[in-house]
Amino acid sequence: MPTDLSDFLTWSWKLLLIQGIAAVIFGFVALFWPGITLLVLVLLWGAWALVDGVSMGIAAFRPGPGGQRVLFGIMAILGILAGFFAFVRPGLTAAALTWILGIWLIVRGIFELVGAFSSTRTQPRWLLIVSAVIDVILGVLFVLHPVIGVLSIVWVLGIMAVIWGVVFIVLSLRVRKGAGEVEAAATA
Image 1: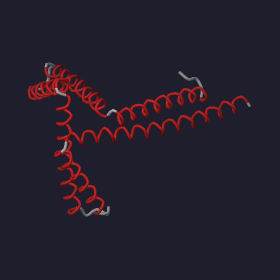
Image 2: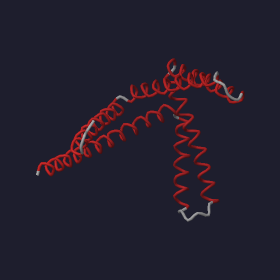
Image 3: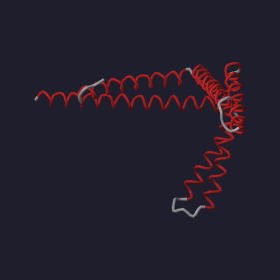
């Protein structure tokens, strides 16, 4: 653990550089191998669903109100089944998740349209309308073409990872320069 500002900055820029390089690598993997990236993301989601289901199952058997325990039990069963399904049928799981995302975008877009026309806020109405239209269009595209939709999500994640990776790398170089300046000032 760093003991002074110079050590802290030296430690920080190295950590930022590692994060940046990892993000760029992930981004390029997502862009050039979207199928593998998608499979890994679905399997990670499946693992999360299994862990969540097991933890809900444990909570279902702990003392507490009966209704809450029943709810935890139902959530446990759903989580374990969803996680298992993600491992057995990852392609179908990815399509189903994209379909659910599409439905959510459509519903969100409809609510945004209603809000745009019923709102008395000072915010420009046209921004809400544009946002609503984009949400509905994306939602319809995801529902009608879930495979293309999920691949586009992977590509967007890849592009964002590369961008953030570059930002972290540039930031690490700036922090490195600051560490050098602090060290030079301390020795002067």
